[in-house]
Image (tube, rainbow, N blue to C red; front, side):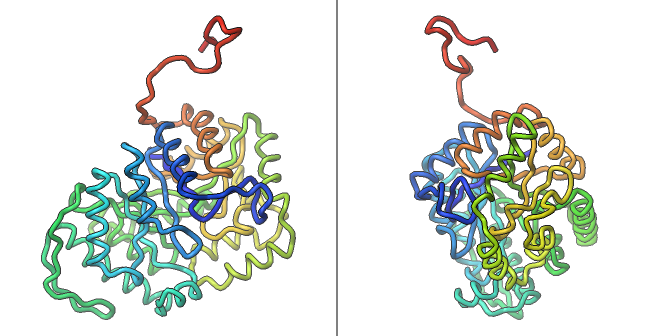
Length: 372
């Protein structure tokens, strides 16, 4: 099992949809979150992408020099990047970080944002272009000289002079719920990512992508992206979930859903269908709560409960074949500690940390160490 955390380069706070309890998210804060994740033993961190976020490549390059073991899941954006440039960026960052880069392929899901970036391809054609992009990108990083002429991309005698540390290339993570997205994932991805949906829905996704990968002569691993709200008791956890959305009003939810409703992303549509924009019935399956998706795009569900309950739900996904878990919580610095301290010991996960073993907790009466 790999467990990654999240660096909130699009903002952070104690509540959703409001500036109340908001927190300045700048590089100093990103560094705190990344260094906390490394200290606690997380495998790596995800850096989000899009116009609402700081650039993930520049952020990852800066953070990589502030950490030594932590891996960085960074977005490659077909359509926004040429495969040759993306290959050089990948190789350079992989060398700078000494092999700590993971690649998150993002085709995009918001036509308005994509148009602002100069991308006007409809949904299915974006995945056609992504397929061509990855064919070129993978061959360049593997050291091949490539000539390619396709519907969307063309290159002549392309080559990469400086190879990456990881061979043939850093691992590819790919999320896509549409048939076109799943097929590209089956053909190229090392890890297929899904957002947090009920277990049976995830089971169906895994079976379909695994089938398509087998038809392409490939094996593929699986990962899931979830928020988490864990407290020492179930009652405290559910109270924290309600508190997280306590400043939302119908107008804020409606505006958020109108913006998210323009997406042509199948995954975003599935997230929206879990809550339908309402505050009622947000627990869509045992301990899986859709409240985050009321105002947040992308991953919109959270596991909610005490440590044993949350660990049990995680193991349900693990038993399906999910090996990589990407979690987040509000605020991200504090919740990275809470989740690691409460849930890591209950999972088949070995936290990699350089911390020396020793005293845990404050000395009692300035005289002796607390019992372990």
